[in-house]
Length: 271
Image (tube, rainbow, N blue to C red):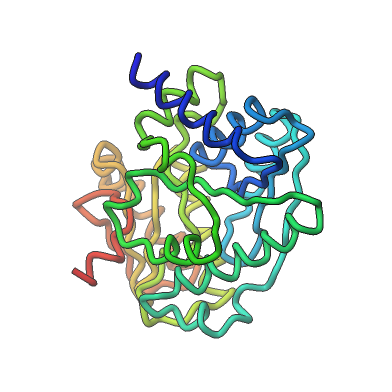
């Protein structure tokens, strides 16, 4: 616990070095803790939450960001832009995340400047170094800092600090943009992204799944869920219901990944 408190103090020190700061705010636990500590360190009047809204953001994530920002009582702006008009993003090559993050952070930096805010930070953590994250390069090039990572905080520590603060999303499953559901090289379309979003919402609402991804290998849908949930989906009734629902959404075949959910599974093909 001592190490945890020391890391939080270091985080406060980093954030206190800014005169004003904009937090790139997705509504997930990482950016929520970052936003809460920024408010503690600088005061609400010197902090703004900036949420990027595009075709890649599930509606439930956008609503969640609104709720957390309202709870923290901070000024919150949604910055909307049609990311699929960016051909480098829509092509969905292996460096998609770089081009996407560069576009997003550029837009957020411009909005921060319009609001009189001098710096932008985002919620990258030390755990992100364990996966393929070309978007971090874009952040570094644009001078967008990652105070959680600089303070040496990983997901487990962030959840513990968020829980201690009473943030309601402290145990929220990891979030990821909808583009992560399609294999690299498969162009991103609004139709495919909405199809994935509807499939995941169905699985959450019907079966109470916490962590779930529907990877779109059209004509195959590959479901990833927690290992503990796999036996339930393999039962005859749920299996038939899931297959029928996903077929109605456009897939011809449905597969359940027996390895279960894992972050960045599409990146496995790159190794």
